[in-house]
Length: 111
Image (tube, rainbow, N blue to C red; front, top):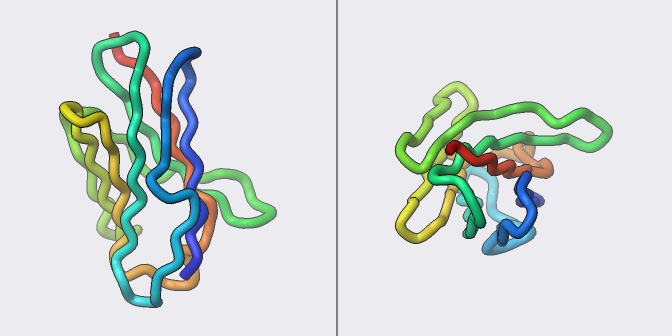
């Protein structure tokens, strides 16, 4: 399973950094995509995950905040943000070859 990972923010001065820009894991293993962030303004992060397959448009997966995690059992996904250390994780459970894609993280601000 090959997963490409890209993080982006929507405010000038934000710092968003993936732990690993690319992950390679065995079929059936759980894959965790992690990203650290630092926001210059706002009080809470609104975090949106997207997935894009080659030649296709990005598709929205789920939304989390620094106070609420989200699980999508049908998609085998779970995401949680940790405000204290400014980190967000996306877990793909039992990753399969069909999960090989580019994953986007978009962080907005809630004031």
